[in-house]
Amino acid sequence: MITGAIYIGRDNSLDFHLTEDGEVVDLAPVSRMTLDLRGRGLPSVAIDSDQQPQAFDWQSDATRLKLKLGAHVNQPGEYLGRLTVFSLDHPHGLVWTEALPVPVRA
Image (cartoon, rainbow, N blue to C red):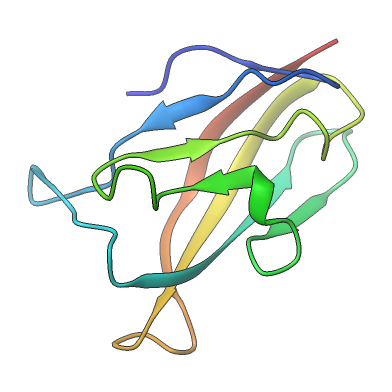
């Protein structure tokens, strides 16, 4: 479950675990992530850890994903994100979810 919000221009983060079959997934093998945000009446936003590495942190704690998106979104609203995870096992990416709630506040 995700709690909290992203604030435009601020360092707030969303921190959460990726789980599979109820177990927390080890993110150590992950080499890249992308997050595509969309919302009704809102501009789409594409964020790629290769291009914006400061937006994603899974290296500090391989069991937790931290998203710092305040510098990458500029319109408040309720977004849903499609999170794609890349690794040696999934070089073309594995869509983890298409419904990651990302609340953005002014």
